[in-house]
Length: 363
Image 1: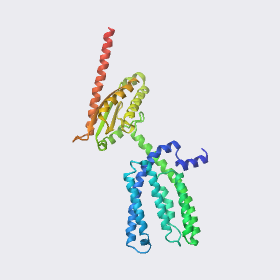
Image 2 (image 1 turned 180 degrees about the vertical axis):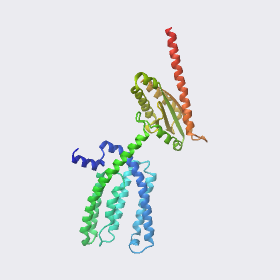
Image 3 (image 1 turned 30 degrees about the vertical axis):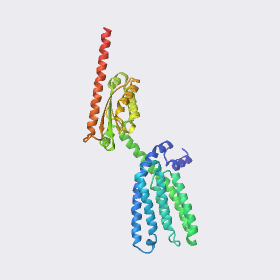
């Protein structure tokens, strides 16, 4: 890999490969939403505190009280949106992230312009810190830093005393370059760490053979499902018939393929986040607020699709209605499992009858 390609990858994808970066985009939005809530809440507390201090003070602090109040209101609006709007509209998260960062830059420039005869300090501080608060592409942060440096320089030339103009502009350009270098380096470290942590999380939650969620994640999530429901919770329990025989007769590779196909079919119906492999040949799926009357037909469609591949699965399901006074999610699973055992007994009974009929006909 040549040097120019490495630099390009650092600026565009924070050191990640292009495909890996785009896989991280939804995760970055989630992380940025959490960070936006935290930082906007801290900003609200900070600006309100500064406002009250300035309100009862004299001199510099009192002159700035209106600015503190205005920034407190803006940060409060961002905080409210981060809590109520953005969880449902996550594509807007970065828009509010940029708004938050721009407000910090504006505040830093505002403070720096209050004393036209003194060198700027606040603007430089916010320039160095703000780009590091969230996850983003370094190229976009570099562009934002360049805009801030340019705007600050124009304001300084038109507002500040001549004897500090040169030092302020030079300091802002210098620290702007430092901010870009720091941002690229730190963002690369943060993105790689985030990618690795999510990979570890994925491995701890996922059955690597089938891609379904594993038993460990099933145990952790099971008690959370009742709280997700507004109307009902549906549990589907599945047991793969003939896995042991297939492993013995055709090899474990054939058995693995059967499990993978069963997981794929169930994930298509119930989603990858709600499909679990809880045993060697056992799977459990959940559906929150689904149409219970449609489950038998969905099970039939899954069974037919698997039969076309000569795979046979016994299914059972149960439904919890929110209107019920008492509910235990473990009882829901046991009820679905019991229905599955009924279907399994029927399957093997039909198999035995089929063998008996063939033997009778042979005689």
